[in-house]
Length: 288
Image (cartoon, rainbow, N blue to C red; front, side, top):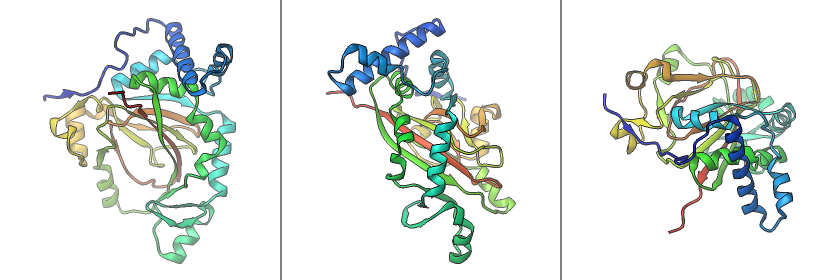
């Protein structure tokens, strides 16, 4: 079957022949980004700041290669203090229904709220004030994440959005779950968009793990380049193969970064609620 490769080559002209070379390039990118942000700071200060990252064991070469080839990289892990700070924030503040910020509730009172109102709560989203906490802001400006985004997008990355949200376990019929399992979609056709995800709770196959279709950011039917529509499991498996449909599970703190053009599946947890942090970056527009 014919496919169209729609991925750009953001690292053209750059060869990562070793782990050391990749890390050297990572540090140069870090310093460039920080210099742009802090202006006239002394070079020595910039170099010192560029090393401040909570992600110290990232194989930069592997990260970029995996993003380019598969559309996703899965080895980002938050330290326990960051996990605890964000999770405590979520448990002590109210969230709200999507598109209905007036209907807010505390997660600990979710069952009682559903009983009293008759509403089925599927998702809970936190407002911008809550996601402006120091721990999340630290991630938004982390030099390693910015360097990954800058290299893959081949441009200065611009932070576009942050979301902290719950997916709640809901009761559903076998038919409803089969219907959910059939719906695959893509968030964007923009080749200059990258999203980092972090689980703040343990996520297994019963917790609505993120499902990504590997290589689907660069292999698409012509219609999928222009039309936003759900695709069935049969369509996806026939085109990409079952082995490329990947469920991403992990302990609290597990993170991954994904090209927004990848197909993914939406579904609801069956037994355990899931708390997820999402950081989205886009490429700074080029000057005309």
